[in-house]
Each structure stands twice: as C-alpha cells, then as structure tokens.
Image (cartoon, rainbow, N blue to C red; front, side, top):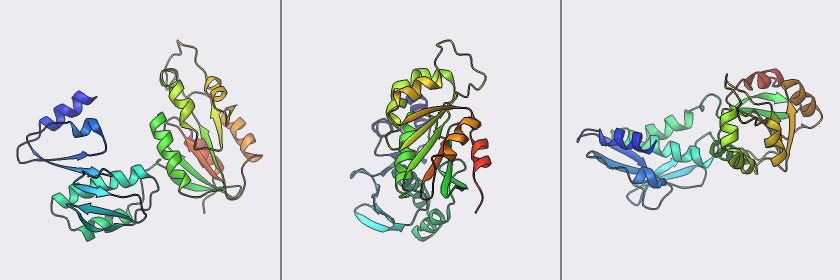
Length: 247
C-alpha cells in the first residue's frame, strides 16, 4: 500500500503539487520532485487546523479564517483541511473554500442521518474496519445523544478473522452493540469464525443474528434521545430503511 502511494507521488511532474497529511508519518515520508504542502493538526503543517468548532485553518502562522463544517468528527476536520489546502494552493479564495465546505452535505453512508425510530435519531455508516468504526463512534459522540446504540454487520469472514482483536477494542465508544450475522460477500469461511465470536468479546455486545432479531431487540431497547447507528458494508442499509421514519 505504501509503495503504491510512493509511486504515485514520485510520478508527479516537477510543476505539480503534492498535498500530504502532516499527521501521518508515512505520508510525510513520501518523496516527490513536485512542490509539496502539508496539512493537519500537526504544529508543523503548512495548513494547520484545530479541534474547535467552527475550526480555524492557519497558514504560515496566520489564521486564514474559520470553517463551520456540518460533519462531526476529528477525521472530517482533517479531511476538510486537506481539501482546503489543495483549493487554496490552486488559487481559490478562502471565502469560497469555507462556503463550499459549510454547504457540503456529507458523503453517502458516512454517518448519514436517515430518519427516526422510536424517538431515536438513526444514522447509517459504511464503516467495516476497526479504525473506521472507532472514528465514526468518536464523531457520533459529538452529537451528544443520551446513548449511542450500534447495530454492526461484520463484512467478510476473512476480515473478521484477521482483525478480531482490533474489532473487539473498536466499540468502546458505544453504549450497546448489536452484532448481526456476517455478510459473506460470497466468501467461503475456512476458519469457521462467526459473528458470535465478536459479540462474546464485546463487554457491551449482544448477538442478534438477522434483521428480525435486531428489530425485536431494538424495539425493547431504543428510546427518545438515543442515537441508533447502523454500521457495515453489506446490506445493513435495508434494516435502516425499514426502521427509520423520514422527518
């Protein structure tokens, strides 16, 4: 993976531009013949952001202005700063950059609000890797719900088997985790791993099996003020569309 990014950046023309994340050691080590700028929370970043909302973007020690980003989460602030750095470097004004970011509605299936169920806000998210699960849960906490209740559908037996320990530590930001059966995506299961193996490792987890089991559990669990987060790269959105009433 690192080699592919290294080849890509090394192939930029001399009059090109590489915009690299200063918070990532591997990204910072990439070499290129083109001009390069960095972005992120790091004090050494050319375009530096902060944790406040609305967040500021600093360039060469000077605050350019603040951005009122709709999407919660530290990772979204970081990504928005990367987009801003690229736009500013090619001549877009900060006012236009800030306006575009403030109007950005968010990506489909990335902490996407889809409706309400029994008074709880329902969000859908594509997260199917431990690092993405952690980032999304951290972002969901910024929405200040009474409780964060997750329904997680593991995607592929091979991923669950390989990352079981990481998954078992990724859900600490949730108050309750309902684990669905694995969405195999047509994959065989030579290791015999099952969704119950993950549920058993989560102190806040419960195995619910299929969508029917999840709905029955949620009907007795979810209430007003809760945040219900459906996560996975399989067909879990079907459950969300079944549960959520549009508002």
